Length: 493
Length: 62
Image (cartoon, rainbow over the protein chains, first blue to last red):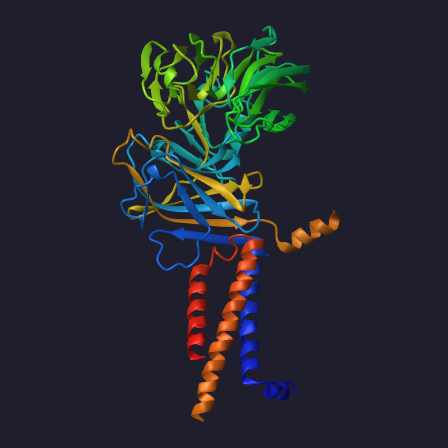
């Protein structure tokens, strides 16, 4: 019967049917790759690109000045950091990124990391390691205890432990063998969510604190609270220098568990007008137990935190502070052994006294690295100060509940006996290396179907002439919900 | 016989043109609704160029 119908058709109609079928198959293929019904797909980008028709999924490497463009067929990173886009036709939960690279890096740039943009407003990225040469060196010298599951890597200076289980059992109790000067002195971590065990002695007084030093942009701080109901009062000034709306989010968490969060939306009635708007926010917090709470103020750089009233004076800023009063003569204290300073304001160029040394910030838009410790005295403010530790306005308040992290300035103290990391060294094949990192995309920022990713070699740039990182291939294996799981979630709604 | 072949050829050319037109329209529509879903795999400029060559060749025959 079918044969008879087919024979009756004119040649033109037969051809039309065949071509129609081909088109249908093509559309189905594109729709299949749009939906990714299995919830699992891998995208690649290689250099040189070879024969490729489409635009691909990994693209838009910028800024251009951080790339060596002498040969457009290769991707050579000469500055830090490098941003790129990952287009996905639908959202995914996790990404396993594998980077194949050739490393022409100086010894002052021992770390290579990759991350996904989490918050567009604050520009915060969650970075994961691809390579850490400091850890690789320590692996050669120290005893390695490696857990079979969970990728926890423990390095010990002396053979105090024979199994990872014994080590973690002692760590949970806050006591490690051979740590006479406390856990924070003998342990360093890298890419490991270590829980804070900091406790303030019961007798020590805690009083309220008011900071009237204006601070620009996003900030986060640790604050020590005793059990009770407390309140944080914050006032903000929206500078209205940019086009976008400037919502304000303040959230409090305890050991990564969210406690409370509050948001102030922005109607954005006067964008780029330069007319300041004052806004205020009160955040009540119930502290169920004594300990360190983390407060995150998520705002854009168009917002200045003009005052902050805290129920506790044990308050330290984490990693970064941007004071902007314009009055100068400011004193800060840090537990870090280095300070990174940058300014966008020519009027802020001048001297900084860090510890017992005097440094000069003589260029805008340039990051200066100063090595010293202790007190920071600023001749002028409107400087972005960054460290790998904490910063406080008075020395008595200075405390750091976190153990030391391993970064490019890491100098081990004589008490250091253990390193705890979630890290896998890269696989080497000749001069090329292949490293893999797992990124969480559930809470990553996705705009127009694109995730923004960052490739970072801290320190790579003007200070390291001739250094480069050549990327051979980037492969992203994405995992998310299957079509069936999605349908089930719709039905169960 | 030769006349049939010429006719066959012109039919094929015409059907190819229809196919390319339909493909181009479908892919452009898909791009409007789901940006980059086709462009990520296929450069539509090439398809447009092939469609143009097919159209010119069809017009020339006529």
